[in-house]
Length: 254
Image (tube, rainbow, N blue to C red; front, side, top):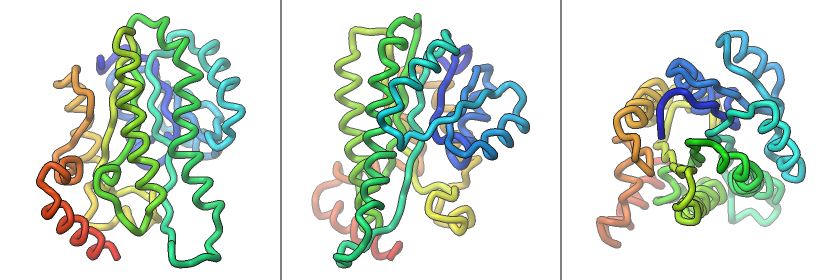
């Protein structure tokens, strides 16, 4: 994917990885449109970053996504990159039969159904562009799950699988398909305390490495910072090593 000269739509871009990525890509010379459901955060972001545009979008409203996609394509005819970043990560106690199922529903809708629906809706427009890309944001936990957040990990594994299929089906088009696979990063995904967790990768370091990969590896299909490699390739080390890594990770986060 080219690093500059794009018109990029990024979902969930008002905080965390989404916002930092939006700001970094804006500085690289791209027109960035940040989509989010919280208008005060959108307004604050655009005020702090002149030139970044915003779009009110709640990816949880699945049925509205095709209409919103059509409106965005009409308003930004040069739109050529979609970054599916919006995500929810919540702990679940699978031993608790009274746990509210709406948590599961929200996670699946936001993390899996929404990116699939939005991508599908925008594909006809993206195919008309001279160069285009779809970037899905999965997780290192797609490859070695954190038992504390089972549905989150399952949706990210599904996104990884779906991304591979999408890449293959679009192989004869001008639309590239990339997968950004973050490690544990200092954001507020699981609450404010995560921003100070020394076990997590500093957000600025993560974004800097991502931008460097995009700049120096334009043909990369998976965007992998060094910190995520043990998770991404955990299975390649064999079953015994995988099982030990799984236990160590989950014991440490229990």
